Amino acid sequence: MKDKDDLRKKIIEVFNRRYATKKFDPNRKISEEDWSTIMESARLSPSSFGYEPWKFLLIQNQKIKEDLKKIAWGAVNSLNGASHFIICLARNDVTADSNYVKYMVENVFKVPYQAHSKQTDFFRNFQENDYDLKDKKSLFDWACRQTYIALGNMLTTAAWLDIDSCPIEGYNRQKVTQYLTEHNLMDPNHFGVSYMAGFGYRLQNITPKKRQPLEKIYQVIK
Ligand SMILES: Cc1cc2nc3c(=O)[nH]c(=O)nc-3n(C[C@H](O)[C@H](O)[C@H](O)COP(=O)(O)O)c2cc1C
Image (cartoon, rainbow, N blue to C red; front, side, top):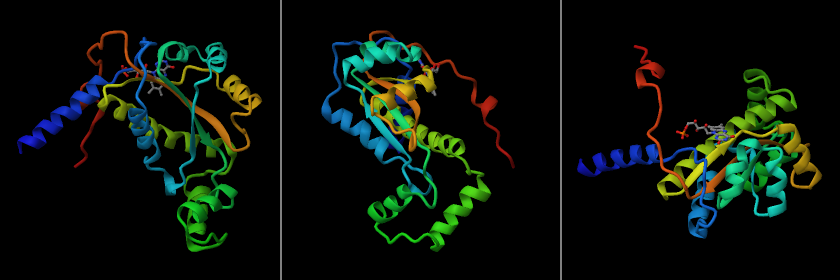
């Protein structure tokens, strides 16, 4: 199984190749084809019950980038040099009775929505009894966790395409929320800010990964 060995080696190479890039080359741009592939890896990501509780804003406006630098310290490097800069929003309104779930069921799953169908009741029970998702903050946190799956997929897809990236939580969430809301880029009744990320080409060398050995983080229970 030489091919499989090569593939395994390549996968680990790609994971070692991905690193949180601190300095991007502002002169290099990601091709449309590559960017579409990265976004497709986000779009195809799994989500709880398939409800896709996310939205990705690609920020190309220079004024907005300058404004964000003042409230997103961890994003300054990406805002200065990354070819593509995104803000990921997570929904806070995904409930069994919401218009959003109704829209997903009817328009994406293409089945009639009923407030008390077996599926809707099952979802309601999961949220309210199994997972204690009863308020906007819990719903938002639950959606945020799902958006990070898309983030992982985007970072890995980029690495496969020799594109560098940086995931970003270094920002003041309240201020960024206020900014996006005031600029009509986000409706806080439906969304909150989950994370940011920069994608582009590095202007620095990759350093070897610093990670704990597997036995420290992995336990087999027999
Ligand atoms: C959720 C999350 C948030 C992060 N926030 C920032 C950030 O705001 N700014 C930054 O430069 N790096 C940020 N990082 C990058 C981490 O510091 C980096 O992934 C970690 O040190 C491991 O290094 P590596 O990714 O190069 O292997 C973040 C990473 C994750 C996963």
